[in-house]
Image: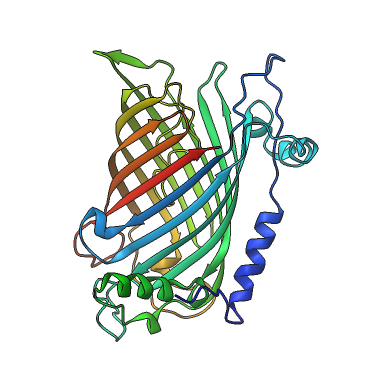
Length: 351
């Protein structure tokens, strides 16, 4: 596989990623009552892989996603003035009264029409597209008298040939000795991409315990604003298991019910099964609407899109979280045949 991101236009995405990572901040937040909570002094590394072959055995539409992320320990020192004076002036309710973590992410998502053997443009199916991005996030949570967390995230990258979607998919298909994708000449054109995400989740006050099993429910509200995605979302996740860790479900690649990159188990072993739903009102989806500033292939997107997900999470050794999620996504564009399914594998390690 050609790992360069780089034809000349690819330098745009490289510069944007550096700018994104260079703007990272970290927070040291005072507890509302002047008492510092017990802080988690471990960072967390996350690896996520999503693929439609695992979910429904297909090879179409949102066909693959990869995301690597790292979260700092709680309340890392060294950036107190930056966060409180800059971000705290605009969003005091998100930053000041909470413990905080800073997240860094690098990811790639790949989209194709259903017939990847065809070389010609498939006007009635979604475009070929790749999305390569870097991200910085501020994750804040408060458990004193309200159990919720906020995630403010910026993703910056590139859509188009510079995202290397063709090289990635072709390399993987050659390894697996399956049908090579032949229509990448029709993909979206190079375009810098930007998305600002914000999400709030509430874990309801009480955890119900029955026959040794615990259960809780976490509703959520979110939004995205940018030339890649613009939408509003509402959803929730129900967890049932043993030793439910301090998390908000396993993470997913946006758009979708994203859970949390952090987790804090209390025992050496625990597990839970979960189910979640999310509905989105889509204002923009570049992977259906096409390029923003140039003419390109596009289809008529559906405004309302819904996800249903089910899965299992296992935590062990107080430092490892393994998860599998199966996602069912409603039709996203006019003329789409059937819903989409894909699976998500996730590994988190505290260190």
